[in-house]
Amino acid sequence: MSAHDGALRDAAAPIASLIAKSEKARHKLAPGTWQHAMLSDNLDALYMATKLMSGDAGARDGIAPDAMRHALRAFASMIARTERAAATSKPGTAQHTLLANRLHALGLAEALIAETLDAGHT
Image (tube, rainbow, N blue to C red):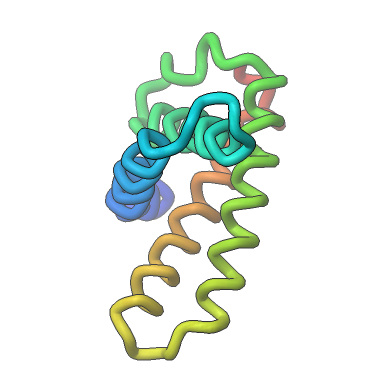
């Protein structure tokens, strides 16, 4: 197992937490609203990252390049929002730690999707 695999394994928990939180929030929103659409896009991106992070070589098969590009846009948005929230949280607090861990995991997931897209694995 490489260091890269270990980092991806460590990123799994923050990603899973964000999925659970996002699913719960999406259920409270009316379908057809921009908020519901945004959360749906974010969840698609997070599920794609989880699939790729599984380490299964076949996980990359069947993911269209357009879907990966769409996921990269969703990750860029999630990362920007997380960075803004982290900038306003006090270092040493649980909230700051949660946001730092989430930001790290989102960055790893974004990089994995970008690498997969660049490598031409579709």
